Image 1 (spheres, helix red, strand yellow):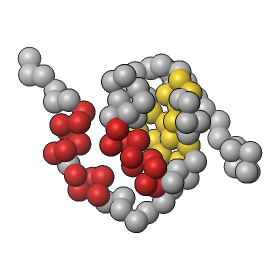
Image 2: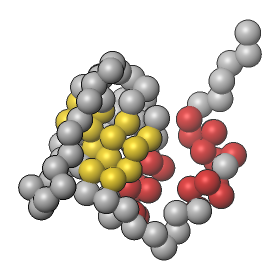
Image 3: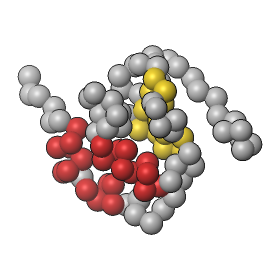
Image 4: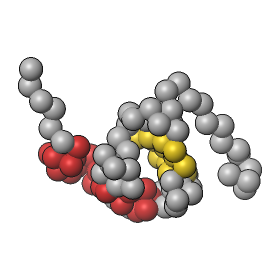
Length: 90
């Protein structure tokens, strides 16, 4: 069985995917892979969230319920639902 490439390698192969966000902003970012703060994460996603000036970012994949120290990133557990508030209460 063929091994899948590491996340960093995958993102390096598709720089236009990340580059497509240049100059944009977003309130929320949802990714499959984890940010660089996770032991198996990728710092490119952390950098993307910073560049987009997101207020909240979520990832799945590892099925761990995590609130990261930066207060922006959240790892969602298996079948976890996260409710966002629509007012300034975030």
